Image (cartoon, rainbow, N blue to C red; front, side, top):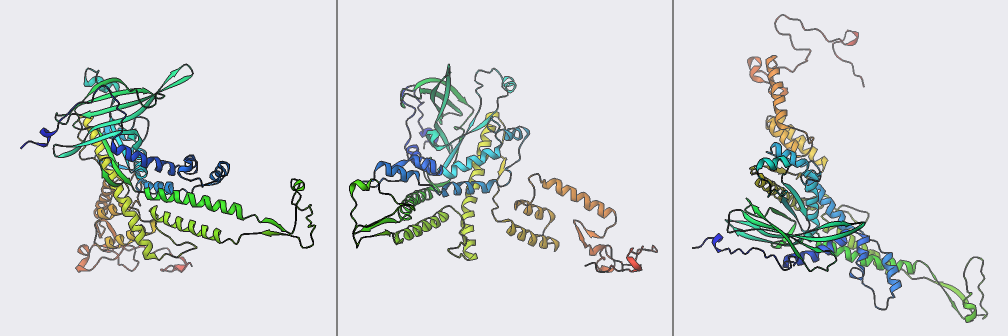
Length: 538
């Protein structure tokens, strides 16, 4: 029976045609992200969508619609939800464990433009939470024409990460190769600018990166260009360089949502985005109703106004209104406000629904009371979703780091990336630590486990070193034992029964009633008025 590798047929990408064609997954995702990005941008970008987000009513004039659009403002729950969720795993500094000196240096500038891996990963996670996915390309400066490894090191060439959003990727394809799913073809958009005097000429670029799954680490990288003003066609092939020592395209994707197909996912907050558009429409109607209803209308009955006088008709504190007819009268007409109240209730209902979709635990407000057990259930639901996404982000970053090692021949398979996955509030964490300390004092936990648990709850600084801390306290224990202290190692407040005479516990230090050892006399404490006990001070 043929193997999976033998069944795969590889045809290199041509050097003519249109590399800008979108895959079916990219077409679907870019339609979704176009809407998500517009809602995420808030009032400015939602207004730019015009009738797409705010329909124009039948027989509504263009000028009245423009005024209604200009007086509509967004309640941006989508941005609040995405930013709040993406901030939780990065409340503490990202940690890279089992690193080496080279990787430690790269972490400080992961993308060759001065971005720390922590900041880079936060942006990566934020884009994935909004768009449903985000990509990292592990790239390397071109060293194809360098003669030796020494020349490459002298040039300072080293691998780095580049982030790409959904709109930047025209197509990406995976294949099952060698018992694993690997990325075999990616087309990535880019742009460059040329200066022509004081003018700027923009060129769209397309990089085609692919590997031959039937070979052992061989592939190609193509570069295509077109004028940005060409309308999306007329791509020109520029160059092709070989890609060696890579068994797959160094392309990593973080999915945040329900995966529907390769490189196609339903974003977590897409329903919240639609709900915000619904709120946008309802708030516009409510604002229009208020504008029309908050001013009473002047009406008259039994009065005939001459059309010639109507142009000069005015109302004010220094004007006089009169009715020529005896039964004529002037009066104000005001709406009852039923529609206004209904519109306000609709907005309140929408905002409550948006809070639930935003992964915000429901809390009590002036309109409702939420019991504590319901809030706990809500927090568990919220934290479990973000917790899973944080673990996926750790895995994606570790995979990207391993690919950096593939460029240089280093083995980073044991490197671990650690994000914050402890989302409970500080009061709850302190209560848990108090219980752990009680358990430790009763000799139910070791010092190492206690410190690990406190560290995992983010109650110790980013510079905390567990090994150094344990070594320090080991030295303290040894010094205490060498001084003849009858204390348990690591427990200064607990006497060691084995070192106390006749199996009784040794008394605590500083007890004035304890007889001194041998014939030595213990000095009495220097209390006032010759007293051997302190007097109450408070």
